[in-house]
Length: 296
Image (cartoon, rainbow, N blue to C red; front, side, top):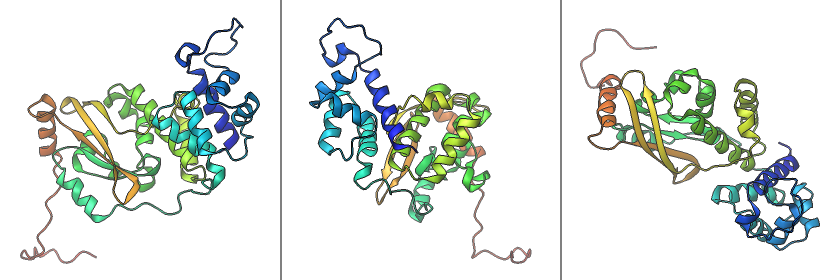
């Protein structure tokens, strides 16, 4: 990832999104050739020279301080995800540029048990790049059977953007897919050296007609909660209120739980799916032998 281009693209799109009226900038009568704020207006709002801001936007600022990041965040009216992303981009040269994923992610046994304990609702664990690290039976029944895919293909962004089934099953598909791209954008700023993330972005660029437009918007998002709607081919319309939690002990893993309103049509649909998608019974090792011999 070209750091200078990333910084330039993000700052340009963010200042274009803020109108002079929103920022409290007095109009001076000059013809505005660009949407949003001019460079000199951002610089003035952030308490820095236009020359210094220009170097920042061009990725030539050297080592800006956290105070500079905070001042720009206020001037550009950034939300929490955008502030985090700006810090990742501008402060990377202070030591973060080398922090790429070094090892495969593993889900600890207790979390697998938790997913089964949550077996009455869909639940799954996401890792870096929206990789689906683990899921319970209801999650696979509502979305898709990630465990039937090769391990390296189990990815939520790939499912939303490339699987034809997702466009039919996921309600408000365009919004959900665009938000997922924004999540990948946030990860790209945090892990600029992640080769698998770069490969995923390349694959989505080639195969998804919509991906490049959303990617070039430079929008970022850290998902925490919201609503999801699915049109399931077997049980019909389903509405969920989801919650996402960073897992204690591993902030690079996220537990996603799709909650269901009690006694709602979705609750009945989930009950039906549970009866159809129940996991196979696990043989009791203390039971009498079946006579089929040991597996090799």
